[in-house]
Length: 335
Image (cartoon, rainbow, N blue to C red):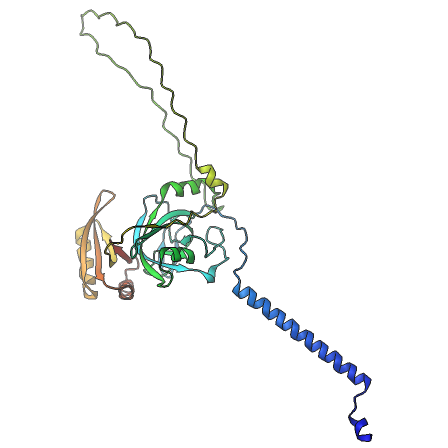
C-alpha cells in the first residue's frame, strides 16, 4: 500500500495533467489549422482586387543599361522571340493599374501604349491570337513580348517556354481603348486636333474675250433633290467603354507556318559606309551581312549576323554583340 500511495497521483495533479493535455491538444489543433491556411493560400489563386486601369504611354526609362522609349505606333509590327510569365505575378498590379491574371489573354511589352491590342502569331505552328497588352516587360535581351500563361497555352508553347512570333498592333481596337479609359494622372492630355474648315465646291465658266457680247445665260434646270445620306453606323467605342478591362475573346486562328531564320540585328544606317564599317567590326564574331531595306520611304542598310540555327546560340551571339558595345542589338526572326 505504501508503494502504491507513493506513485498514485493526487486529484490536483490529475487536474494539472488534464489541463496540460487539453492545452497541448488545442495548440496542436491551432498549428494544424494555421498550416492548412498557409497551404490553402499557397495553392489557391489569390483573389484579384478590382484595380484601376488607365491609359498609359510612359516616359523613356532605363533597365540594365538599355533605354526604352514608349510611344504610340499604330503601324507597329515586329518579329522575334516570345516568353511567358504566370504564378509569380498573378494577382499583382500591372504597369497601367490592372490586375494581372495569368489565366487571361494578356501580355507585357516594352514600349507599346497600355493597354493595346496586338495580334500575336506563333511562327512555329501558325497559331494566331488577339492579346491585350497591359504591362511592361520582358526585360531580357532577345525577348520582345512576355505573354500570360493562358496566352502561351493557346499559342502552343507553354511547355517550350519560348517561341518565334510576329507581333502586329490592331490599330482600331487600340484606338478605342485609348478613347475609353482615363489617362494616367502623371501624363498630359493630348492637345485636341483642330479639323480643317470645310470648303464649298467652286463652280467656274469661261469668260468671253474682250469686246465680245456675252451669250445669254442658259436656262437654269430644276435643282435635283439632294440624296439623303445613309445613317451613320453605330459606334463601337461605347461597347468598349462599358467594360474597358475585358480582354479580347480567346479565338485562335490557324495558318500554315513557313520557314524562318534568326538573326542578330546590330544596327540600321542611312549611309552604306557606316553600315560597312560596323560589318567590319562585327565580322570576327560570325557571318555578317548588310541588307538594304526601305523604311518609311527612306533607303536604309541593316547590319545583321546570321542566320543562326537555334535559340541558345542566338542568345549567346546577342550577348556577345551587346558586350561589344552595341546595346541596341536585337534578336529578330526573318520570315
